[in-house]
Image (cartoon, rainbow, N blue to C red; front, side):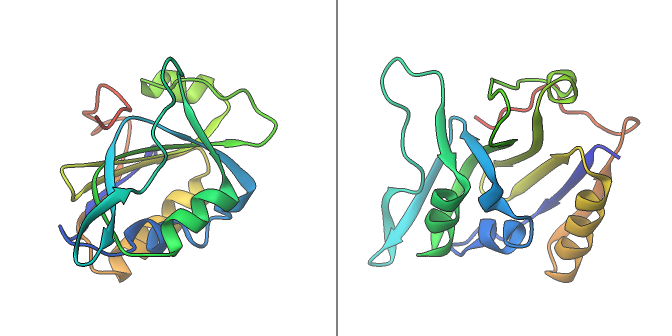
Length: 159
């Protein structure tokens, strides 16, 4: 098993918190790729959920505590999300393909495309199984495992 895929509702909420809250997200460094997600303010799209990359920077990094604060405070609307988790002592680098993921220190990839389509890759098989059960229990649609045989994704980039 490489990971899982499923669909979340196209609505505001705290879907990242629902998915990640039991995964010890505070223990990792998170690389935030290009994306588009907004905090909901006065029932409309407000400021970006994640900090934007500084000019000429190759990455936006958040420690797990900061990511947790971002996804647990207010409701938000997810359009495109690209999150990659690395241990705090590992080499954080760009991961664009599944092979790069396998060969890297990256432990976890979460991608959301077009507000609803979630793809998660994890090196830990127990994490994959846990998230599959959680997605099913939350009533998310079209939940399935991603395997070597059915993985059609060519890149691990959301946007």
